[in-house]
Image 1 (tube, rainbow over the protein chains, first blue to last red):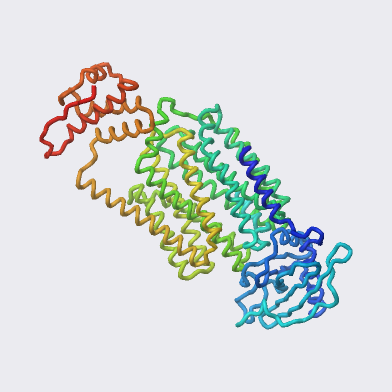
Image 2: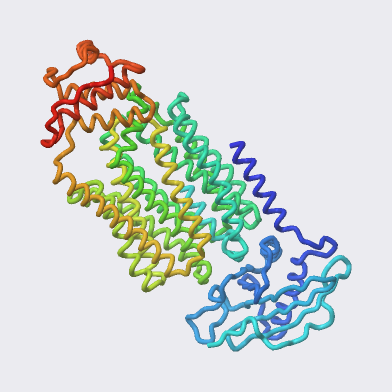
Length: 167
Length: 465
């Protein structure tokens, strides 16, 4: 059991080291995702009068981006009381092919995040998907203020790319 | 029941919330890291069972108590990063329990002929308990959350630990040599059956992770996982009855081969048309095949290793089987095969193993038809050689003496060494260097007795004295 304990401790240590952020002077990436998710869901609520309360919000890392496992776990726990966050590997996980226009499962939203460029500020593309013909895309600029990420101005609307499904 | 609770609780775990691509390196890491000590420690389980008084109770009690503790820990960490290592510790403990239980049953069953029946009863009881626990677990999940399902599972493990304390005293035949057990268990029949069983266990490990990943990635709801688990459980339950019926028309080894054919056939359908129904059918066939294979495997061991009663002997085999499960699981995680391809690979795997077994059986039948049945002295010599190879020359000498008695009951074959004659008269086998010499004599006598018609030189002289 001692050998097992030592090996397990080693694995946990390795796993923990793998999650450390390279820039410790910045707030965590998880905070940046939280700010953007809140903004996107508020916008969704304002536009359609819909909330994702007690539903599933699907999140996809678009293009070459990836969202660290530690950030995923933190976000799942952060929103646990409001809704389920599910990080997906394939679009089929979030869309329901039993219907035309491939609506998102559970009638909430699929959010896609592009890569986060390293630097003092962040520039991130984010897209929301309801169904194949309802995709919105934004470019977020984030900066650090009072030890947390804030959105600079209003996110700019751009052409959707990452979550576009060609039917 | 505890295992069912654990499986149902996974529906509310991190597994369904985070990206599998992000989690995959950790899953591989934790699987490897937790299984490494298992591979080292599992064979020791048998020694504890054999050497420590009441060791079988200690081992079962330990695995159940540890599962109870980890279930309680996991209950509050289903959505934490600690979910993965704790879930794999649960998995390892389940494997350890499986090894312990399968090693203990032959020790506790006084009449070895009942081993298959007892194992069938155990499998049925487990299936019924799982079936009863499923609706309770789902209800608790709906009313509360996955954590409470696990806490209920911890209660089940606690009850199991209590019952483990009430196990009867083991009856181990102290006369049987461990080497005789080991030799019997490494015979060709048991070895071939172990390979087939390992193939099945490997396929189960592969399919569990492959189907888990595929269903998650295709956005299937959690109840589909439950449906697959139920299909597999029903297959396993039916298998405990079907095995005896198939046995009426096929040999034990034949039943084992047939158990591989069924998932291969259903796998073809699931490969060509991969959807919920075909996948459920495949899970059913896999459960049925595994159950039938297990019954046949027990039967082979019971027949071909009648003296194998010690936990140590069984723990070795069971560890190999669990290791096959781990290799299958690792392959599924690393390969990331598309849905149909994974099932296709499993189908091909079952088909290849079944064909290889059938070919090997035909070759054996053909060989037997050509040379006739292997005479008893030759089989005794094989056993003597196997014992000598394992370092027990003294035991080998006893078996060699028996072989000499069969070929030359009245010293009719010549030449006969004086010392050999005295050993036979006294009825005691020699030890040390003389034992080696006796095995050598036995070889020469048996060779002389069974030399072919072309061998016209007559009995060869015994050169070593």
